[in-house]
Image (cartoon, rainbow, N blue to C red; front, top):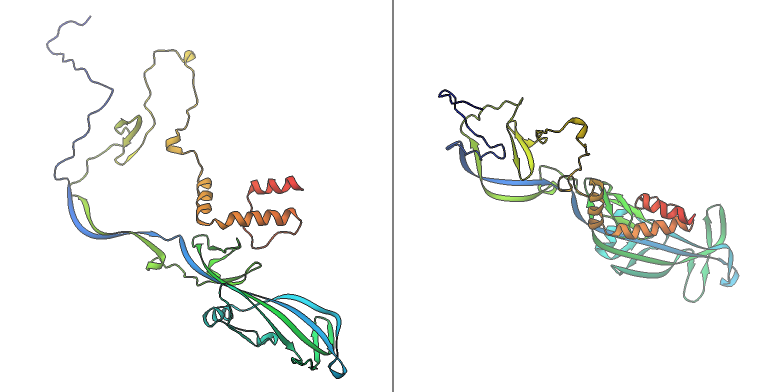
Length: 334
């Protein structure tokens, strides 16, 4: 029982909530400025040019009176490698220089299509059937008095794709992954592939994306901020979450509640991490989903790579890397 005492003052305080703090007047100064908000560029679009030259070669013996006959090992097929410069000129001028293999200059090439031509690579052979043979060597085999003719297939295409500058990779349409900074690579499906790699410079427009450009208001503190004591900073419960000022606003552990129960009667439960703060997907899952959206050709590349390994054709050295679930799929077929 409390007796009356004129010197005692009693006040009831609510521990449920704290009234919001009022912003001090004239605590900030505003300034109008023109700003530019930029972000480092990760993905860029590139134009890819491809050239694939397939040569089917025929070697025939040129005998007396232009009589021709087949020779052992006279039929062959191979891919002729063209340089990046030669491929770009072919796309620009629609002619391909094959003088290195004796094919001359092929004109009127179909862009984004297939061109097939027949020509004599070595020796001489005219439309009347007359021939003049020469000496010709293929690998370790040398031929005398032979004429070498060929059926040449030229496939050229150009398309637009996306490159990941941060990872330094460019995904070709076939699913092949190449180094973006190299500017070219050879693809088993489409031949020589060339693109113009732009090395990102953070100080130029090619290295960043402008998110916002225009007028803005800058807030500057005109008074010294109040002193805070981080040893026991004030805490607030806002929308079910505890935060504290140290003086920066940061997440705080929940305050300990008063409990009249004994320690033996308390059931301790492990705290469940809230989905809203930690998320239901890991960072790796989100990056994988982002790559799926940016590079849809990877799905096709994975299918081709799994098929190659299941059929025993070996691993394609430039193929898209397989993840654990794909490795399990391959092991089921072994």
